[in-house]
Length: 157
Length: 290
Image (cartoon, rainbow over all chains, first blue to last red; front, side, top):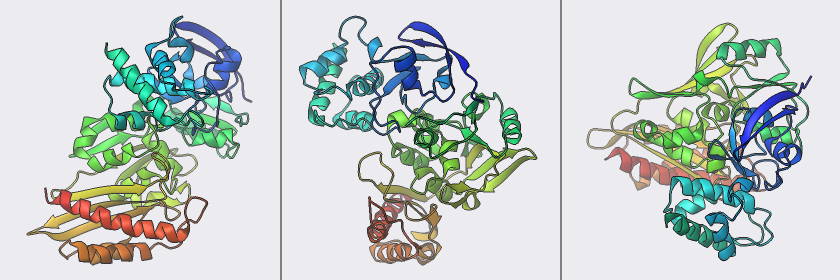
């Protein structure tokens, strides 16, 4: 039972190959097996959004996916955003105080990344819809909203 | 909060999936988008011995126009439905309801078939299926069969699917001319499961008489369900505020025993059903008159 399986996937442009137990969630695989601890584990049932990453360009909850399901996929985590320096979205969150304790931030950044890939001039309503599934317990959402507005402006330049 | 051990199988075709279900009868569970099943696994409320993942069954991911209606593969994601111009044009009620489901991150993975087969009483898609008189195509060891939406949803988290059957597609018939529609729900926060909701379709004829109507409530019973008594009051009458009040009152009275929990009392859910029904009737009428 529960035979380990071979998975091949790309994370932030780096190819990985690993043996994984079927019950390992993708977020635990990223953190525990690959050592990519930028993605955070919050509620583990798809409610808080802290573990949001991109799978083939789409934002998903990595606690609601099994590592074996990511076989063949291309993933982007928060570590892949900046390429050595801060990404404009990260700069915007810093400048607009879009984070305090930072626990939820990786999820917010990745959800914002997908939104701004699809829409460089989102309205406040569109921002709220895209980030509605991300929970922050300390910063306050207004600062996050202004961070996303600034990030959009930076990316339009 | 980690899933219990299970074996993982990923068939490439419906036929393979069915034979695997048969082989592991009683201990296997189908994994579609995982947005309901994964939380249940993480919380160990579900402990299947075998998971059969349909993610690689490519033949189940499509949106097709059929006789003016739409046929949608069970593994089509909510995001694909949301982004489909065809769905917007042909089944605007389905499209509107999709936008109310959870959040983009959930809609990117969650599937049409998964929501239907999971049959959460507060979920949007079962109500849409009943309102649009959708038909479910399922495949099992003895071949395929069709199940009407009225018979598909049996009770809380239970459908007419046999343990060895796979839901493969849902067919939504064409919307009739002069059929207005509305889909409304109330949630604590945007994207949450609805405390109560309603789907309405209304047909007008002649100078504006109601010739047919469907009113489907969800979140207020073990499944989404039609309130036939309320529909009967409406049919044959001219839509208007006074009759809507009567219809909505009747609809709320047809709820057997609304859920009562932390989020809302039974009394409040019944009240919401009445208010939402009245608003939805108004909107459906306006749309039928365009």
